[in-house]
Length: 207
Image 1 (cartoon, rainbow, N blue to C red):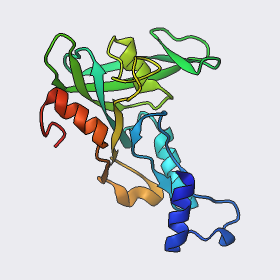
Image 2 (image 1 turned 60 degrees about the vertical axis):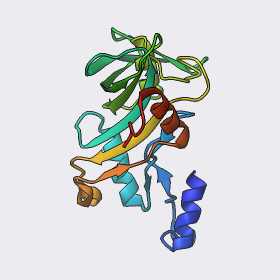
Image 3 (image 1 turned 180 degrees about the horizontal axis):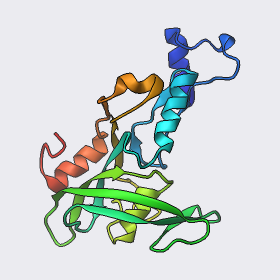
Image 4 (image 1 turned 135 degrees about the vertical axis):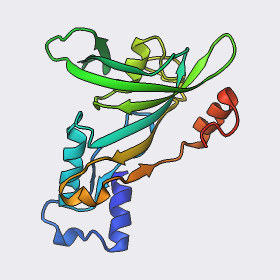
């Protein structure tokens, strides 16, 4: 992805490697494997520095990261999950803890259910506000309440993971990005996600 962005900017004349001493276009955020959606890049060193600062400032609310997820089970009402996350380096998995332990990091995930499927094995379409941003956070947090992401091969079951980074909201950016205040960048869910959502929750559910 970084190479694609770099080639695109070179073709537009907005990035000239020969004139740069150390800067190279790079992502300010990353997505878990099999998660779709938005990744933001800085086109110059100052923009990337400001983007990195916004993503690192996890709880000020200056930047909101909104995801769509189809979860197993039924989630009733809005929830704010506040726990701790510990990573197992050997298995590349994380554990959600109720109490702080050495090496564990605080996590917060806000969940808003949007629709519930019918039948004996319900699914819930959710909007996720990722307040902190740790690797595997959404997937592990949802699994910890018994509602793993549908198709999550690591914390649930299946191979078509229904998790999409759908929106980034610039609430109160500062510095070189202050002109983006109030701006919302959105990414339409991919075809597989849309097809699954419409089958479970009804036509035009994502419109």
